[in-house]
Length: 326
Ligand code: FE2
Image 1 (cartoon, rainbow, N blue to C red):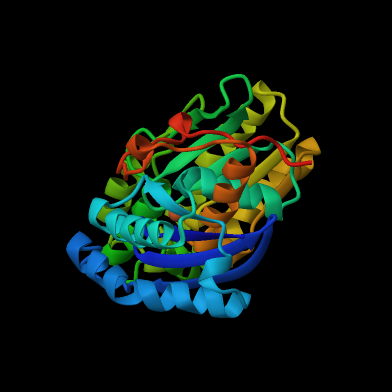
Image 2: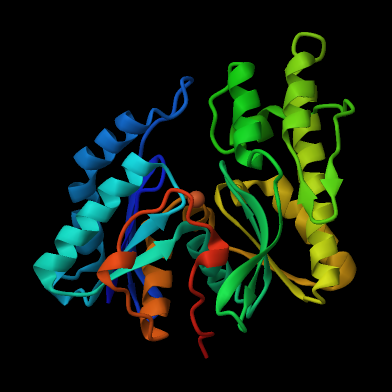
């Protein structure tokens, strides 16, 4: 039985997993508002809410803290002060309970929970969130993940949220843009895909320059359609080049119905299997940190004092890969 703590950005999450089964998934979410995320304020929020969220997870899972066999936490990537709070909660608990502490890569945790919930074996992963947009796969030779392609500038979620703020909508990983986009008409936007890589700043600049000249819903519809089409094209190419038959989409933006609809159409055409996690597990959460933490522990990984820290720019291609579960 393992407790996972997530605190890389606006969410403080605590999840409890036992042999791959999610027993609890509790979270507290800082409201971003129009100013964006102020790291010290979000960290303060995590300090205030952390204990309550962890206790709620234990209560919901009907387990006592002393039943926990390990604690995992998000090592990175993420916002430094926010990561530090989760790490401290995890460290104190692991010392008190005398159980191992497992550092987890946030992106890998998103991928692994989508893989599990989507009943997939070893899919290509399209990881889309605020700060990240990457096409990833498992590499069992190096026992790490490989990034096949990624954004050359900003993450797709931040692009959508930046535009949402510019037109007075609440930023929420693209969901406010998706709501506004209903019944919109297409306005041409820059479309930038280079092989397996893509870029989103051109769309943002172009769309911001068109504010006032077109209806809000037309601009929302157009940036969403263009950005998601770019992701679909690069992902489709990665699937074919890697000769893979399974795809999962994960991360905060994977909650988008439109993105899943487009990816599922592409998969249908090729006969690919397509899967993803429920929304609760696509937004940041502690259960995914517990799940991957348990898989790493079961795979025989042990972590020394030196690796028990936080790393704001912890890339998935330097994170350990768990052994496949039977
Ligand atoms: Fe995330």
